[in-house]
Length: 191
Image 1 (cartoon, rainbow, N blue to C red):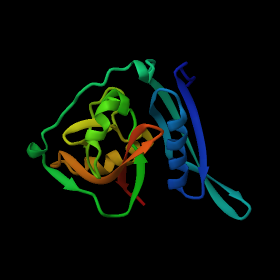
Image 2 (cartoon, one colour):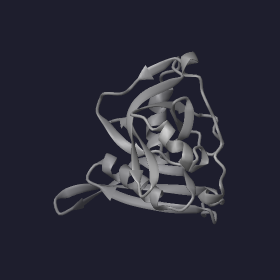
Image 3 (tube, rainbow, N blue to C red):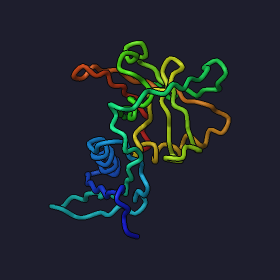
C-alpha cells in the first residue's frame, strides 16, 4: 500500500525488542508536529545476526495528525474528577520513563508549574479518532497530554484488561528544560 503525503516509515534496531521499540519512540519525538502510529510490526520483528549477536528491527508507519504549528494552538482544557474514578495503582514497580507528548495542546506554558507532580493518572481513550490506542495523562484532575504512540500501542492491551478500572496511577516527574516544563510518566515494564 503506498504512503500518503502525511505518512512516514520509521525503522530502528536494538539488542532487545524493548530497545528497538524505544528507538521508534525517540525517532517519533524528533518529528515536527503530532504523529500517530498507523502500523507497527512488533510481532514480526526481524532478527539479524551481526557479529555473533542478534539485533531486533522495528518498523512503524506513522501519520501526521496536525498541520498546525504548536505555537498557534490554544490549549484546551479537559478535567476529570478523581473522586469519581475507580483507579488501579501501577506505581512503584519496574518501569520505563517516557516524556508526555502533545502537552502544548492541553496546557499553556503559564499553567505548567501548577500542574507539576510526581504522581500522574493514565486513562485509556479507545474512542480517540486519532489513535484507538491513546492513553491520556492527567495531573491535578487536568489533562496534560498523551503517552507516546509507540508505548501506548504496547501498553493499551494490558490496560484494557482492567475492565472495571477508570484510570491508573503511575509515578513520574516534571523537568524544566530550556525554560519549558516537561512532564514524564513511569510506565510499567512489559517484559
